[in-house]
Length: 185
Image (tube, rainbow, N blue to C red):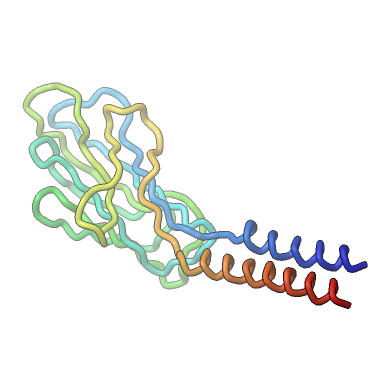
């Protein structure tokens, strides 16, 4: 009976530590497919996955090579009601999505249109996404890569993971104390 009690307490503690779900917000940049030509308008899609958490507003930064692309416009995707664009100097955009009811799920966050102004053909990275809270881009994606989503910065709550670890550690301490108390009886 004593061993069963200790085993159950230890099992609950282990499950608490290892089953803690840390939620994170992710963005993916999907480049246009096909051959690109000077003067052509191209569209990048910024996808979002809230990983179960609801957001009323969120932002993502996007850099582009201003010698190769000219920013034309941005539009909301299928997830947030509105997406505003802060066109900053040096080929930087900050896209901010808002939804009064909040949004939970995954889908298209924004559609960003550029005009190709490059004067010579070649292969290069045209756009990257970055966390607007940090000054430098963190992951690269562009139309010269194989079309498809590219993983980008993740933000989450370390406090949730820390809370789960603390709760799990508490259960382990409780099971160790129970073991010594029961052993003395």
